[in-house]
Each structure stands twice: as structure tokens, then as C-alpha cells.
Length: 199
Image (tube, rainbow, N blue to C red; front, side, top):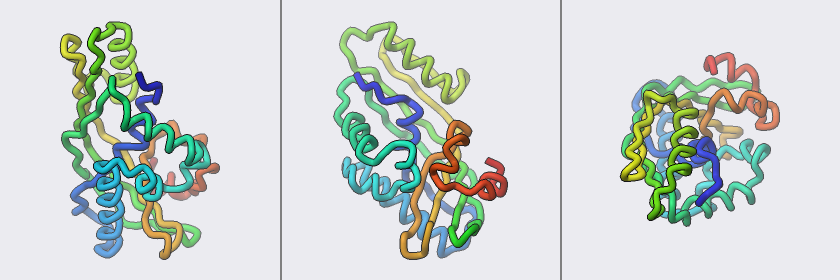
């Protein structure tokens, strides 16, 4: 069974394609949408190099690219735990905020996903561990477990940042939550961005 943390699943894999129709300048909106669509296409085809190319490279300061690549390989090949993303909707897309010649946008989104523990024996201790991890991440009200089937239904509201370091580099994406606060300097996320977007 995979040892990859549930939070890292979210960080790496939930940054998918959204119907971006709210806020942002139209040209930037289209470019952000294109980056997300690219990420989704790579995810669907399990193109790990493509996924990592679309991810904001500052993330590699806290988890080097080669380690993240290994996690993705484990994720795609895992036979015991399978995630499926059923629905993802953008609740709000901010206007672009520029600071130090870099551009940032905040995306608030909702998601519904399922997770299946596929082991034949349905080890109760593993199910409980998964349940605890998911409820810690999304809240008890947002996680429904069917122990007999070994399945979970998860709902959540998340925040994502789209980041463009230079016009030439294009938009990159990353999931964001409070657990990353201590890593902002390493990831080169200015404090002004946190303040501006009320992160």
C-alpha cells in the first residue's frame, strides 16, 4: 500500500481542469485555463514529466523533483488505493496580482472525489487510518466511509495559486493551504501575495 500522505495527494493531483469563468483579465484567464487543461491532460495520460513541468517549480524547494516523480509513479501504479475525481468547480478566480515583476492569481474551488481501498481483506486498521487522514484534511462532515465496500466520498473547498514568474515562463499551478506557511520563503512566495489574497 502506498505511503504517500493524503495531503500530498491533494497537493500533487487535485490541480486539474476547471471551467474558469469568474474574474481575472480575459487573456490571463485563458492562459491559466490552458495551463490547467495541460495539467489535466498529463494526469489523464499519466505523463509524469508533463505534470511536473506544469507544477510551480518553487514546490521543488520543499520536495525535490526526483522525489516528487517517485511519488507520482507510486500513485499511478498503486493497486490498493485508487482515487477518482468526480467533480471540481471554481467558486472564484481573482484578478491577477503583480508583485516584483511576477504575477499571481487565487483560485477558490470545490471538489468531490472518491477513494477506494481495493485490498481483498479490507483491513479495518488501514480503513481507519485512511478515514482519520481524510477527516483531518477535509473535516468529518465532508468524508463519508462505506467500510463494507472500502470506499470514501470526500467533499472539500480548496485554494490554488496560479503563478507566472515571467511572461516567457507561462502560468504554473500549485495547491495552497495553511500548512505551507512555513515554506513560503523557500518557495519564493512573497508575503504580499498572502496578504493580498487573504491566505
